[in-house]
Structures are given as C-alpha cells and as structure tokens.
Image 1 (cartoon, helix red, strand yellow):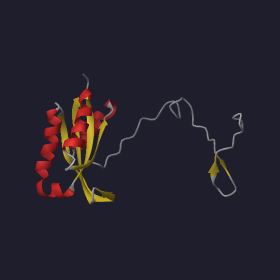
Image 2: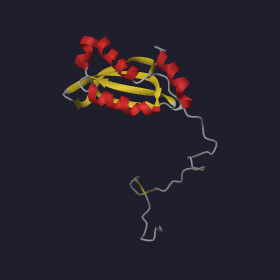
Image 3: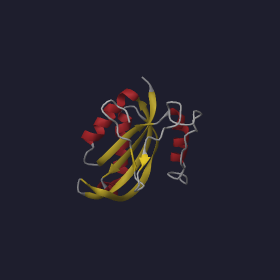
Length: 159
C-alpha cells in the first residue's frame, strides 16, 4: 500500500468558519486521521468573494491541507468529505503531489512569508519542444484580418 503526499483545498462555509474556525478545522483533521492520514501542514489560504454563488454563499473560506496517506484510502476520504461534511464543505479538491515537487511544495507551505508567492518552474526539456521529442509545428495560417485558422482538409485528409 503506497503512501503518497496529497494537497487538499477546501472551500468552506464562511458562516460556520466565522463562528467556530477551530472546530471546523478540527473536524477536517479528524476525518483525515480517521483514515490514517498524516497531516503535514494545515492552514488558512484565503477568504474571498466567489465568482458565482455556491449554495447561496457569495463568499468562501479557503483552507489548504497537505497530508500523507495510503493511496487506496483517498476514495474513502473523498467520499467522507462529500457525504458526512456537506454542511461545512462547499467544495473540495484532493490532488496528488508529484514526488519531484513534494519537498519544494511542503517547504513553501510551511513558510508563512513565502506561502503562495513562490512559483515553481519545470526544468527545460532537452528535446527543445513537446514531449514527443521535437518542436511543436505551427499548423495555423494568418488571414488578412490577422486571425489564425487551421488549413482546411479534404475528405482524404490532404490540404
């Protein structure tokens, strides 16, 4: 049973978090620990206005948690958040952290000053282009209006 690192972003009900933030975050932690997850970092990310109303709420409280857990239990954790905590959680998203980014992401998450400010950059690829080993061909052509379009193909797939 492989143990992987995960990031979970919660969008929480702002009315519940404004009255009992410690209780709400305690419930999130208890749910993760129920499935044997080890919480590495858990912190407020932001409190902001939403682009559209979710469940009648126009504002949301974002909470970010990094944890390590058995990969086979992630489905159960996700289900528990959706079903048993639907009165607190408006939305949530669990994402696996790639091993090559794990140390850097956790270092940034733990540092109060740098949190959310540091950008990660991929190492440049030696092939000079896309993953298939070469540059990406430009298949578009400009028309007289400066717009780009793909060349038309006939029934046999020729230009």
